[in-house]
Image (cartoon, rainbow, N blue to C red; front, side):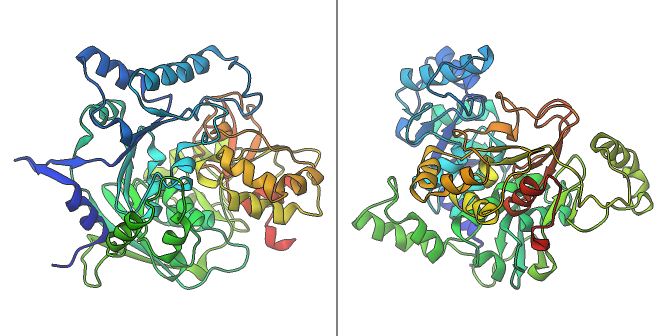
Length: 464
């Protein structure tokens, strides 16, 4: 019987199915950060339990950590307490812990793939919605709540209902100046923020297959922003080449054994999805958001939709969103002055994103009116930037690298955009207050961010 990629992995990890259809699913990898794990560990302690398979659990702080002076104690008391609590819990329960300044510390969704902790065919969970990132490796990866973190710690299993399955294909070739982030923002704007609710999405098509591993991680990262349970891409030679020689990837005979399984991980030709959607790569431009959810996006040279084009039921929220952003229906926002530029996050904090940004700013200089926060997704990325001389290119252009962390993606740390200020951000969410109370966020890819940083305005990088 023909099966989808999702079904092949799901069925291999299915422990049992209850009478009501709920599945008991085995989990290969649990990632824990400092925000959603304290109550889960407290629950273990109260029940007198220990992690069932501690070798499959990895912990690291990322949300609350500062991106400057990480060698000093965290000044903000709530953040300091959360980070110290995670360290104590990992030590007490015998779990792998990559703390601040550890060479393998960084954003969990960057660290997992780059070290080979996330592998094809796995089931991966974390108390974080952007766990969907890991699906780019050809695995089932999704975010869970704190009570589910506790369940996974104690049993290495979860109770889940099998989602519906959707395949989104992007056929054709991308135009010059269009990035993986633009693909993702384009899809979300077409699907809307609720268009994939109840589904697990497999991305396919010529344009998706042509992406690098890091670009695929960007696409899958944003799956949750259209309501999907997760996103995934079938592993192929690009995946295998990326994983070869990674620290935690199989070695020798174990690698050959794993490859036999991994090469079966694709949707059979006549596999059936609950929904199929196809887009053309040639239709995608550099994409930006103009509102307060990732679905409110458009080509950078387009105009914000007219009020009359919005269904009556959605006009109040549409107007509220534009009022918050300081924009008007029908307005063109290319040329809009910007105050901050943020390059980083689990969406665009990898070395390829910094290479892309640096390639644009080389020979140019940061606008004096712009404050730029360039935050690598991990210490490994930071080291690559140093080794390749990218830090020098950025420095000559007036930029400064910060230390790894989630940073201004969600403002749970010291990196907050001030109220009323405009930020062009390569992160994943632009909700009201996401980057700081009153902050106005325009989501974009690294090329658009680079163009904004050197011009001080929202600029189409292709025009330069």
